[in-house]
Each structure stands twice: as C-alpha cells, then as structure tokens.
Amino acid sequence: MIHITRTITINEGEIQEYFVRSSGPGGQNVNKVATAVQLRFDVANSRSLPEEVRTRLISLAGNRITEDGILIIDARRFRTQGRNRENAIDRLVELIRNAAQRPKFRRRTRPTLTSKIRRLESKRHGAESKRLRGPVYPCNE
Image (cartoon, rainbow, N blue to C red):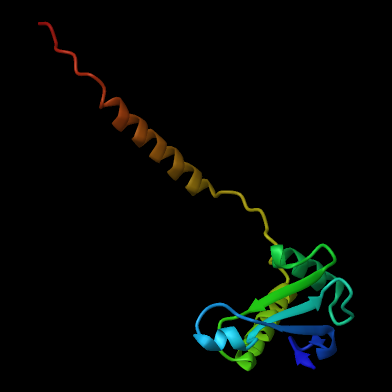
C-alpha cells in the first residue's frame, strides 16, 4: 500500500511498471541495461481515489494522461532502476496529493472608498503631468 494522505491509499497492484532502455548519463551501461521506468496508473478505473480527486487529477495531469484515463509517468533521471522507480512513485504521490487539496474558494470583494479616491487622484495627477508636456506658446505682449 502506498499512503498518499490520511484518507487516500493506493494498492500497489493498481500500478504497472515497465522498464525500458534509457537515454542520458551512463555510458555503455545505457546500451545494455533497461533502467528507465514507465509507470502507468489507471486513474479512470481506480477504486482508491474519490471522485473529486479523480477529476482534479485528470485536469492536473494534462498531456501525461491518455484518452482511456491512464496516467503515464516516465522516470529516467538516475542510472539505477531502483532510484528511477522511487522517483516515479514519488512523482505520482506528489501529483495525487496536489489533486487531493481542494482549491480555495475566492470571494469577490469591492474596492474600498479610500482606494477609489486614491486611484482617481493618481489619474488626475497623470493627466496634469501629460497636459504640461504640451507645446509652449510664446505670449505676445
């Protein structure tokens, strides 16, 4: 079991991992050993996620999620399979934690009277300084 929050846990059976050859650091090791991890998690059919978390996770995942609702995380940052696997699971947990947080409800507020007055004063000041930039006409006496 992977613990995400106090109320959300994911069964490790819901996650599939595929090991593929990685590009990047490692020299000849890269050509011989499949160290990169491709983690797949079926968000659409997961029983572990509440419905509201599922919908937020789908929107947060963006292009990492397929049309079938499968989240794909590629981890190829490290040279070893184990560290890449940990990195992929950590990224999955972090993504689900972000989806589990409810967005704060924004209350619309009105500007205060003082801020309205301040704004109008600044507009008047700007208009006056621009008016003074105009051409200067000589006086004919």
